[in-house]
Image (cartoon, rainbow, N blue to C red; front, side, top):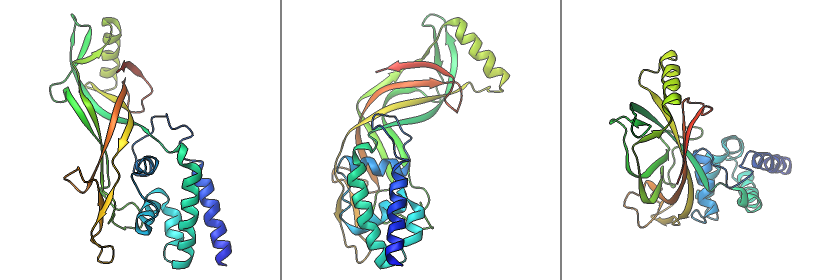
Length: 252
């Protein structure tokens, strides 16, 4: 029975790997599973530590965690299978993320031929992107105890943009579509295409037995956050939340 369960676990891991990004250069959504895989890719998360691999599995494969975690012996075999799967698939773990933010437009600047950003959401000296935060338990109501909960990308050089360059003709047509859609706030969506360049390894301080152990980066004062050095490759501006109607692509 145990062998059969282990075989099922291994099959689940193999099938699960098919859902990982096929290309590490794709800009994937900054979800909890994707960010933990990036930490593993950059050798910032040590999966040889059992409590860490348990929380890693809890986030990246909740179904597997729910099926086997309660059985000490089966779960120990699953840990081995996870580590083997990670070694086989780590080259496909993501290093690039597409962070989407909502922005509102102000008036059209006819001299600059640019739709200016609203003063409520200026893109001025931006260098930190709050990619993700565990605001609720990721699996079975279990809180994250050892891993950081917030993940931030930090640029070396801040960016500033006045607005979105667009011709007068295209800007007028876009405004008409917004009015027809009831988008009176002139809301658009910006996807910041970020490539992670370095992640300082997480180090433990505390006691696992007393559940006080936390893994953090020593240079970050907030132990609940992960700081990731990043490069901004481009920004894509879209009319719609589904990111299908591209307005402008800004190359960095």
